[in-house]
Image (cartoon, rainbow, N blue to C red):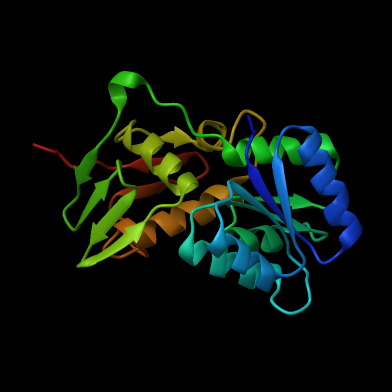
Length: 232
């Protein structure tokens, strides 16, 4: 049984070959793409569980390819890059990536990131959410859709896990580390830029005015809180 289907996107044949071999020996199915354009074609034509996407490629670069893939798919995306500043991470996450890995990386590190991107946050069986209504929006957790102001938006898997975890602990401040480990996994805890980007994305989908959030609130230096109105 396959551990998952992964598309490796890099313009360097040797890097693609090494990553594909490492993935196949660990039980994954792996395909290759040499460019952002080819990656976009392959994700439109077939189903993948995750895309490993190099950020620096000729033609359609990784960021542009990430935005294009994300506009049509909720496949997990990990960006690969030699740059490691917070600005670079935020740019990649803003483009729609779920995670970010800096080259050179070890195979165990990459595999850990793949597992984190593919994992689903656990939910207590008696705490499954179906739908909540806010004043201006309705969140349907069964279909991962948000309806607000006559428009619909779809939550990516990580947005869904983050929002669901916050809603399951309404009106309570959830520390940064707890959120990161609940959504991305136990190896995370310091990646505050991940939360900033994903919270901003969620605010654009559920808040009437994202610059003045009413539901998804920041608790400075501590974490985030979901202010849930009375559902009665």
